[in-house]
Length: 61
Image (cartoon, rainbow, N blue to C red; front, side, top):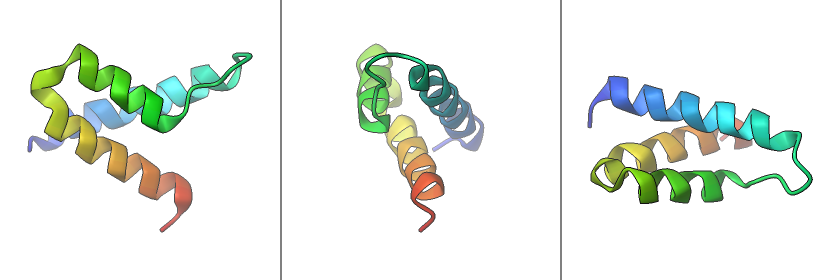
């Protein structure tokens, strides 16, 4: 896993969450991660790792 790529996807997820909050039907973090994986299948490991890091940050565990 490439740390720079993981950090990039972490930031994309965080930005997507913030944008989604203003929508009538906000997307979940899992939905955002699934969309990223569908659009960037070759990066699924990096996206999954970024998802886990963002989830841990949100939950506080």
